[in-house]
Length: 65
Image (tube, rainbow, N blue to C red):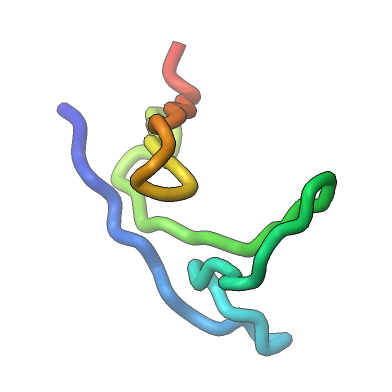
């Protein structure tokens, strides 16, 4: 049965924030990355639904076959 995961907010040993997305503008042709962590019940059955903002359609990623 599907179960929602809990997002983890923390700071790594080297001082980097976990699960805090950047707020800077991303220029055309550029990219941005950040760390995100989740507490999940079953890591072999994951589905994640995301969108960059409310103005965009959701993208769904899964490892379920």
